[in-house]
Length: 407
Image (cartoon, rainbow, N blue to C red; front, side):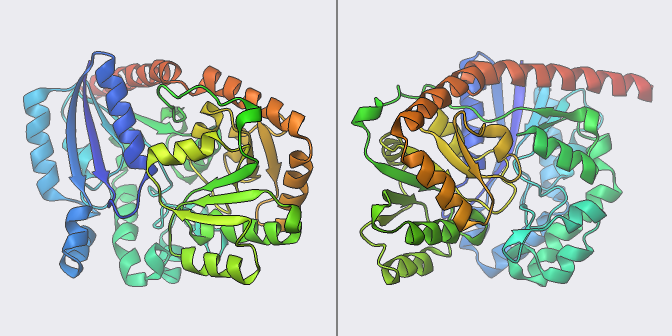
């Protein structure tokens, strides 16, 4: 099968799980013998140009005429069976799907976030979940609140992009299959306007993970991995550790973001410095090493996550997960099996669930083994490849049926 992969890489200054997934799926497809083509753009280009770059991105986000022309030429020349799009924002634009109109190439899109209907990409505002744009099928709330980068001016570009392609019915007419990362996300996006029968569910995978480290050889520590922004709930985690006191295990906070300085200063002020370590952004290899030696991963997120990469990695390494009961996380982390769930935003409930679990290391070790078992059944490269091929086949069939209807 000949597959064209389309992706706008996010800036390297802000490591992105979407970039990682794109490369992992590319390697998977190429490794399975498919001919893989690439059509990509990089946000680093406009970041280096600063104001001019921001203007370029804003103008390109709704409809990029240059990209459409170049993509049409590529499609005419290479005639791929499938065009699989990961991210179009801001330099590619959803116009890439219109570029494929008139060709037999089936179109597929992975829903890494909620940007098809949410200007910010994550339905989150004022430190809590906000789904007004999805529920109302309108961009008025986003423009009113300046949801993208806390700016009404900056929000105008993604809001126009969303409104334009809703008006053009791009998603109904020009995409043959959508890939949601969870059943929760599938329902949310269908309720917001995507055709339900075109959405398939495929989680992330982890190719060739190392064996899990024996429980008795691990450090007595807990790990958080993620962006240090309001939506990730690290402030709730620190509040719980403060209440836990001197008996709290070591907490390794891996990641960077706008709240790092404030959170690290707060940890020092509350005299958590000996128990809480901010390690910053680390390489994938070093992050995996630290995670594999831990006895628990905590995700205190306050927003709707797609499918956190850290969960996939923890399960692969046999590390139990304690996560917020919000969005898709209860679907991924089975409460009492491979981890535990707590009320999102509640430091009290987080502390209660995690402290009780930590006090029973035998139970925690069994959850670690269950996490690895869960991974081997659902999140291996082989299992993921089989799902992906079924999605491609369904997209190709739907494309053929649409072409017949037009004749």
